[in-house]
Image (cartoon, rainbow, N blue to C red; front, top):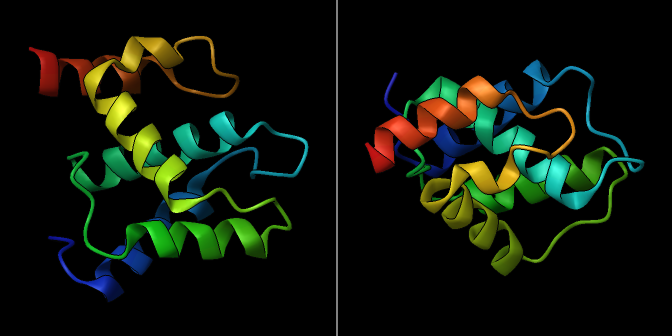
Length: 109
């Protein structure tokens, strides 16, 4: 299913968030929460170019979990950093190394 619109962004974020195990919590770092969610979004979507509205959808899910909501600039920075240098997040708790390798293969060849 191609994800292109704001409702698609919400659907993508919801699908990714619901698939996270363990579920994100306030005890997790901002980095772990965002990178884990974005890795799952990559697995579902197949790309790091997420649909318009993903930032707000992610902020809403984070707020709904009772976690401090990161600024939109932070969310965009993590997405960009994850695409440009996935290995940077290899030691982030809960992040699947094979997903980081898949991102690296897709974007850094």
